[in-house]
Image (cartoon, rainbow, N blue to C red; front, side, top):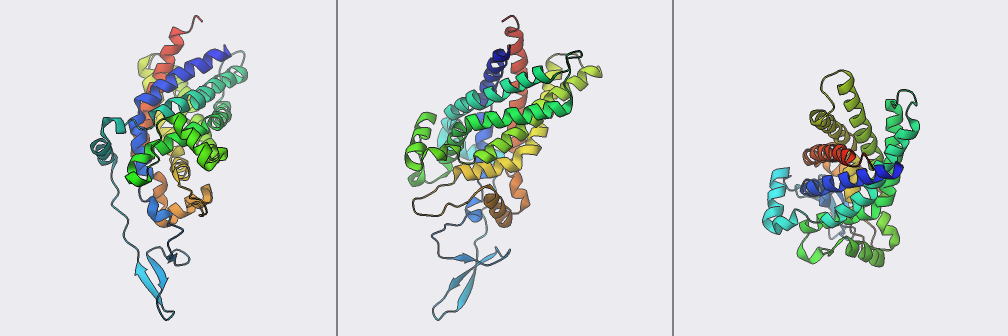
Length: 327
């Protein structure tokens, strides 16, 4: 019974991940907009003025005088439609599926683990008489399952972010990974095995938030709809509950997702300090350079992706459960 939960969750997750991959790609590209202003080149001999003065830079002029040079304005921020069109125009249809092999591996490792463990916890913690699980326990099950799943799937997550982000770089700076296996092997060789778990604390935190908000809220919304007799247990209920769960998960996870994307995608050159020393440093630099709402960059494609992903995930899951109910 426990193993079946892993199989059902894995099948549904892979289908949902592949079908919404272009939306996830757009989200990643939007989250990286303006990053050059958040993380200056450490080799550039221009120093930021202290405190919160980010609108100019200070350089030493001949004679020891200091010159204040206004920083160039950040490039205009493109919306999800224009980002999607640019990817299509510059990289073709295949560009919209950059990193899809990493998505398949990520869903196989991460989502199979979290979905299966969540079902195991639900069975173990449910009331033996009523068969129900209180919301608090659902959230706890989601937090634990999500954290373990993220730790297992982090290498594929790093590879996916890099493969999705590659097309936005100049041709000379692209990593040009051929597949997720090539990406993981190159990272291990060039940056060490530990690079495969870069940003893992963020991945784990995000996964705990997403899994707890997504799976727990889906079960809660579904139970409430059925208990109040608003709809019968069918496609309408599954779609309504899953879309509501997707919205909750998007609001809760977007800030962590932005920082995760930037930390995983940063390029660390030999002998140079990394652009970010960690998650907190990345968050502070992002907020100072771009404002607090930078943490909600890519929110429209996040909800546009998280909504359909969650709907496809749970609708597919319910159908797979029906097909495998006799096994």
